[in-house]
Length: 579
Image 1 (tube, rainbow, N blue to C red):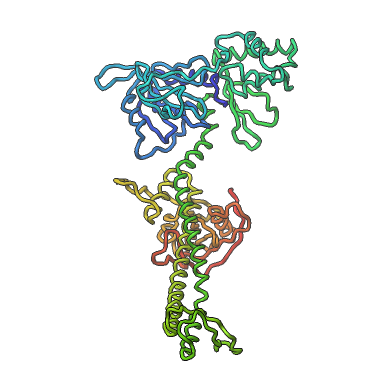
Image 2 (image 1 turned 180 degrees about the vertical axis):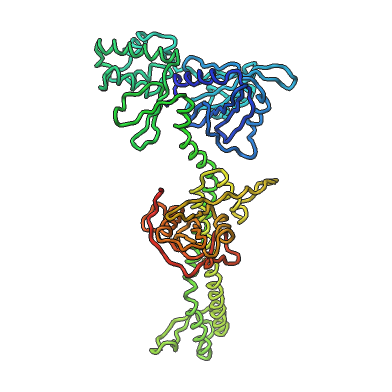
């Protein structure tokens, strides 16, 4: 991983220079894997993000604070109790391990001063945030590790904190470059130099090892058996320079951007290995760099985690409805034979005089057809001919009633499935915690989700619709979810405004505000593109979009949120584009 022990040493120095002596003002836990400490000095306030996420574990100052839940988790409340008002007195890093110890002077419940330590372990999926008391015992941890998970190193309240097992690598803070070269000679000769460096050195990431190889080999790939005396001299020189930059924390944070302008790596060295295939951007601080590298990806990950339970619940309901509809359609297909049942009853009634009791079947002329073909009718030998006829009539009436009920139930289930598709689509467009909260509240109101027991939370304040200015200065409003679609179309919009919606495709209600003007063709097309972009058809071309005046849009009684009917409409085919 790019956030190696050497880079963490640079972060440690930055934290020490800016926040040592600061006091803990607030503590937040936006989700189960991240915590934010608000630290205040006499002159400035800092937001310290500590993340134990498997793919983005890190610690740094941040400007992008994640949204916080209304109810803080237990660990957050414990941290607030023990660390509120505490003073950050020291930041420690053992060698170049990916560990950082934040020592705080705090006051306990008895008023005595105690030393508490927040341990940040940055180790991929084993990353953790651990609170340790003055005796070195664990108070609690973000991720508890019990004997069922491992027997090597337990992380549980009351146990003594132990460092993670050492990897036995060389630390550049304690050894000289010649010792590193000697250790390299003991590796497999067929091994690439960069991989050999990675296996020997502590606290350096693959990008640093590749950079050393690039500089030693002047851009050529180097295997250990290819190293000449000249290569060894260059290797000793660049390892010495690396040692100096790590000791003095003199490196400058650099971010590597791919050809698509998306961040792909970072380091405290200026990387030369990418040449013209990547863009290298320099940052003034490690925190600024890490904010730029992780923020967009972490935001997507956070939203994905929070919407996962909703997505799973909606998918389960949709699958159940689909299976129900298929079963009802199969049953409805059987009801299509009900006319045959009535005909059998009529023929039996018309021929009672010639049917003997106790027969299991009888052949009679079908006078409903011109050729009077013979038809075999099955009978129940235990019933009289008249009772058999009545049984056929009874089965006919039962099939007719079933057909009516099944048709009604299938139509209702299809409308319900269409509504769930619209909720899934709005869920895919949710970008904030409030968007997810509104979707959750909508599902609770419609009976698809149960409100938490004892919950007295007030409904979240409705967010404003999305606003856009399109061609010729017209304003367009786009609903974020079904409830907002209803509010936008039925309450906010004027009767003369133009309403847009993708044809037979789940999506947002889109309103072109006319303000008494006649909309231009360009404005109509822009509004139609916005409606298509905020729909399930956003990645398609030639998406059909219906539009009409708001006065022609109506909501049937009892219809679910976002469901309307409309007439006097036109259809436009557009290709949505993000811009």
